[in-house]
Image (cartoon, rainbow, N blue to C red; front, side, top):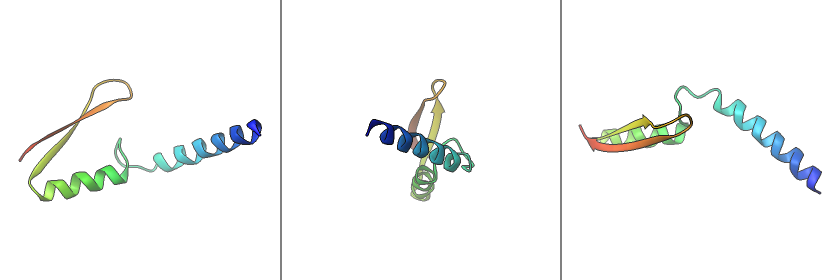
Length: 62
């Protein structure tokens, strides 16, 4: 059973990496859509990288 779980996890990781490699930005399309929708309302979102694999999202006004 553990071997099946391991194989399923490896397969899932590979498929997610392939999916993520097609992104135009350092974040996914769901986050991009939220940024775009909020920008229409006059809210300015900024992603600030705070380390090797992390970021902060700051909210402000245009």
